[in-house]
Image: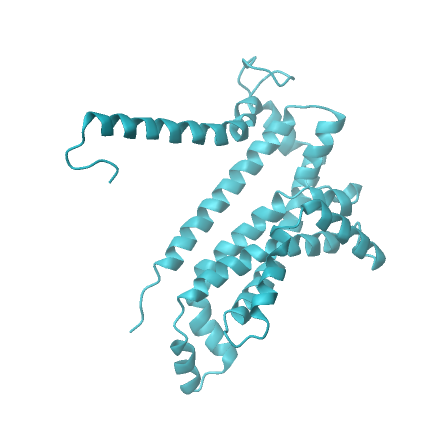
Length: 274
């Protein structure tokens, strides 16, 4: 409770100013992100306020032209491939690191999380130099593997949080009952940590779907993802179609992040098994 049971006038003024300050901070953070949304419905061909009229013509351009359709398809191919690999590797890594007997756990964990700290452009340059030598540059596999390095830490963190409250005695009970380790994993552990796994998968998908720097280094002309197509469009020809594409990406990211948040909360509210 911010107010005492019998608030004074000074307390009411203080709380009111606090709420106003919080509202200003939220507006400061959200307004730059939301500016493309009204511009995407502008009927004119320029980025101007006030709008010349309301129209969905730029959404029709994004969803109806071959160039943007190819970019959306490339983004989905890369994002789904990244999500699949990052979820499997991140989940197995989190399970291994949750074991206190794992050697060098305090060293391995910071190394796994380093892609979250290292500037993306450094990761992109290193990925390009490495994948070019082994023939993976300008291939879907190269982009997916590079994005997997960026997305896996999110899976490790979310699954690791789910494993924190896991009762290890359940796995021991399954082993005593004669279940094989693989059976115990799929029948006991995975259902309990599934919200964390799905939450990590959602974060991995968003990370790959929104990424542009690595794609700029590794993608060929036929493998341009949606963010890369927007970036190239900003350099070559300004079109409000970019704002429509940005709005679609923003909507997808918000939906996935909401799903990830809901799943993470369900993971924390895991029912106890007596």
